[in-house]
Image (cartoon, rainbow, N blue to C red; front, side, top):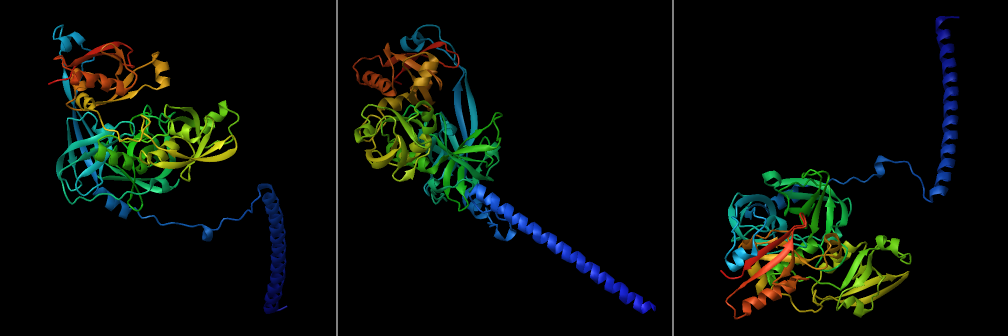
Length: 499
């Protein structure tokens, strides 16, 4: 056979063999596809949903651009340099300053400096920040992004929400636009803008990790912190407090206030006060000088916790009503102990902290629709929002509060059990120029007795001071007895109420 025909025969054999292999492969693939389909059908029946192969063509991708939000925000976030004078004295004799004799213990004042951030919220110089940044400040220097410097004055602060308002004499500033923190979604991108470690105009990015994170909250009254935080994984460090949390449109959705860390530096999670709360606080501080906090007169806890003690509870999300306060508008409206609040004006409530956040959006005197789950049956009630005294009157700070220069809160029931006391108020903030500061008293001190009278609420303390100031006696002072929880030792202070 010639070489030519040998090549032809060899090519023909190759074609036949390849065809057979191809046919075998095709048969094998078809059988496996049928097997996969049968397997898919089986899994679909098990999980009650179709299983589909992932395809790059079906995965949506969003091109997130942070530059617009960053450029808009950095000019509205300021650097705060705070100076405060701190006394290292822990104890003074009430005989020393009140009666004018005794062994005077020398004060050793020292200057303490700190930094933080703030957010411009008006063209004429109003700045929102965290209350703990400026609390007790002697002076506050504000440095704008364009390096201009101003001295700020404190308009007001609220320790319970950790929000404060300060002002500088400036015009034509670039404020941030308020966003809607209620509309934030888990997984949504946000930016944290501030001045960590004195590094000005620092921008970090992250996502919303959770919403409605509580602080130490177990009831709805002024004894407790207002805490329903936005949790993010945007890097926040010392110096970021009071800075802006913004969405990708550059809208202010929160005020950065805390981190979760065992080292004092960022360890993965940070927390911001929602703008729905912060905006309400600064508006009240500007208009009234104090927060007008609306309440419905209930003590609440998370429904999931309540269900462990009350097996009649049918829901796991919501705010369980455990007790009523005096003059409770919720009780008057028909809400009962054991009810679980599941919505406020149509907004779903998932926790006690979430419920407080929603109530805080409104004003004293407003009426809201509160939906409850009563052991499986849903009911809705119109409830009037009142102040902590049980009325709809505007609250103003007493003259005594201005003179004392401090904020106070009633001890919680748990704190009373821990401290083994049945009454007392805690000093939560001390401002410059006040009589509390002059006395040497420090934050955290628990006041038990004033002029031999037991003190249960800040109002009782104010009332005693007001009577002293209005009285005819030339002696304008009071003696205070209490203790520092960190040591448990009793301390006495004399407060001189006149210059």
